[in-house]
Each structure stands twice: as structure tokens, then as C-alpha cells.
Length: 510
Image (tube, rainbow, N blue to C red; front, side):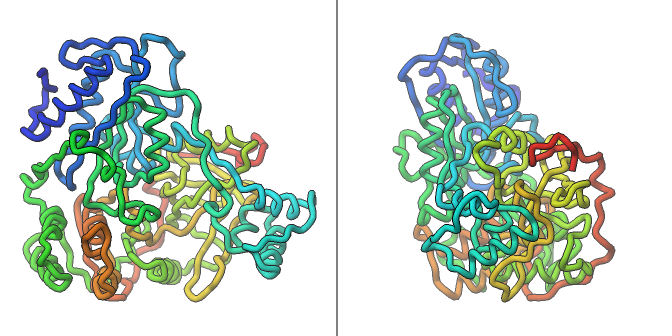
């Protein structure tokens, strides 16, 4: 076997050999440097699994280099060359733009799964609501929506002329009226999928149909998708299709954050025992902080990670309050999380344009200011190759004890955003930040409830995912207190001027 110039460990070399063998069977020979035309009917799936620090991403990057070196072309949602019978291609995918950006920083041209293969399909019943709101149809009667909810939707539409905002006012999320995603028809060739623990069964099935040669890279210790009842796609693969990376490579740097993450594998370890380990680590290493309060200064760039949705909303409200943010508008520098793109099927190209720029569900953004037209926002997309855009948007600010969110900005259609100063640990999967704050009282609540997932206490899975989001420093927050900011919100460190991206059919910049 001819290995890359980088020296691989024994377990990485074994995994490299397994991938080489699989690809050789598909006509791509890394040892001989030869690519044969794709073989009809030849299909294969493999999973390379390992915990944080085991070298999965490094191995993926080395495999990409080796494939490119023998002439395999990397394709993305932005460009695919003309189809030729002899051409062999590779697509590197991740579930979120943040996860894709981690690979791009390593020089791997990664894109998102949605960008490469999906387009949305809307529920026709909610299309009826839209037609009624726009004056093109009768008022619908739906079991899911009360008269009061429809009245809220109508009032919102009168105020904002925005169907997605009206649906949000009625208590509906994008997932309520997007019934599914239409898959691309044209198959691809070789697919590498990072953060594969986030895949649900439907995505996995679609990927297998699109990619006859599919390799998954993932961490089985993370949280399963919320709709999978603790099950991951790895669970349905045969043992012969799996390869585990066991060595923790980053431990060579004596990383206390990874030490804590891997301590959670001890079945005898209780929550109080784990907190003592955190406190001890904080006493001897500045990369772990035993914090008596949430540091509000960090929330503008990296969210506090929580388990409970009520905690998330309270922390967001407190963040906005200490910064003096008015209820009716956002301040430049406030963080946002994209909650979906609310565009009908006829605007498919605009959706693809947005996704090409990195604005997909789960994308993190910094609000830069209002656009030139009502409902438009200037945004900095965190991790995107071209981060500065101007787009029509629907911004929802949730409040404690309030049934429905307040909507300070709403275009007729566009991207929907939630506030990003705090996010749930489930939504944080696939992302990493330099500094991460974990709200420990939420994990204590999960421990007290005694809930399990895939045979493991839920609090341990939550703690593992939350801790491994930290690249450099972990703040273990033990009290429900918020520090005062040392300064105002800022955007001068982001740089660049927003590029135009209109979503309402006009070419004019917002």
C-alpha cells in the first residue's frame, strides 16, 4: 500500500487500506494510480467510526488528496462538469454548513447534503393558507389550526405581507409545512459524508441511491437524530462494513477537554463525580473553566449550549436585556441561527442560490443591520466562503412565558431566523467553536430524570457532545447567572461589504 506523505497510525492505516480495497472494487485504484470508468450496478457502503480526537477528519482529508492526485474530480453544488462516461467524481458532504466549513479550513472542498441533493416539497393544505392570505382563495378550515391561530396569521400578514411570518405567528415552523425534500435524479459517484452520526434514515437511503460508493465518517458516541429514538445509521450496517478508529491522536497534546469527554465512557461515573473531574481539571489547566456565571461576551460569537428549550429562551432574553436591545429591532452584532428557507417551489433557483452561499437550516449568522428594503437584513454567515450577504428574512424572537414569538422583521418570503445566543446541544452537533459554554444545570436536570438513550444515560451523551464542541476552551457553567458585558456588540471585526442577494423576484439589493 502506498500511503500519503503524512505518517498514519496503525488504526488509521488499517482504515485507509479498507477504503482503498472498497474503491479498488469500484474501479478506483489508489495503489496503482488508476481510474476505470464507473461500473454499472456496483455499490458499496462503509463507515469509519471513532470518538473525538481519533483522527477521522485527518483521514478523510488524506483520502481526498489521494483521490485528487489520481484524477478523481471533486464536485459540489456550485459546479459539476459535463457528464462523461469515463469521469470519476467525489463529493464531500456534511449535514451543516458549519461542519462543512471545518473541512474547508483543512483544504477539503466540502459542501452540504441539502446543497447537493435536496429541494423542498410543501404541504398543499398550507399552500391553501398562503392563497387565502394573499386574497386568492377562501379561508381554509384545518383541524391543526384554530380560528384564533388563523386570526393571528391574518393579522401578521396584514402587518408584514409575509406568508412565512404569518405561519410563524400561527404557531407553525417551516418543518410543519415542508412535507419533504425532492431528491435529485442524476446519480453521482463517490461520496464522503462527515458527521454521519447526524444522518436520519431517509437521508441515508437517499445518499445510498445517489452515491454507489458511499463512505461515512462519524462518532457513535454523539446524540442520535431527534426523530430516530436513539438509533444511528451505523446500527444497521454489518460489522464487515465498519472500521473503528480507537486511538485518540489529539491526546498527545494532553488535551483536558478530550480527557473529560472520554471519562464519560466509565459506566460507574455519576454526574457529581463528573463535576468533580471538571473542577479538578479547571484547577490545573486554563483550558477548562469552572464558571459561576454565563459569560455574556462569548455569547455573541458562540452560543451557550443547553438541553432544555426553556433555558435557551431565558438565556437569549437575558442576553438581549443586558445589551439594551429594543423589542422592536435587532442590534448589529446580534447572533442568529437560520431555521429554514421559506420559499415556494417556483423559487427553487433562489433557494439554491441561498444554499450555495451557505444560508441553510442551522447556519449561524451575525446581524449587520437592516437592508435597504423593508424585511431585508444584511448578514455575515459564519463559516461561509463568501460570508457577507443581504437577504430577505423573517426574524423570530422568542420570549419566556410567551406562546408565540415576536417578529421584528419580516419580508414577504425568505430565510427564517431564531436568535443564536443560546442553542440546544442537539442543534450544536456538527459545529465547533474556540470557546464553548455548557450550561451544567440543564445536564443535572437530565441526570435527575434518569433518562437513557441507546443504553447510556442521556446526560452523558449530552455532556459528550457539548464538551467536544470546544476547540480551545471549555466553560462549565454551574450557576444560573449572567455576567455583564464588558462592551457593546460589535461587527467591525467581521470585515467585508454585504453582497446583494434578493429573494423577492427583484434584482435590487435589500
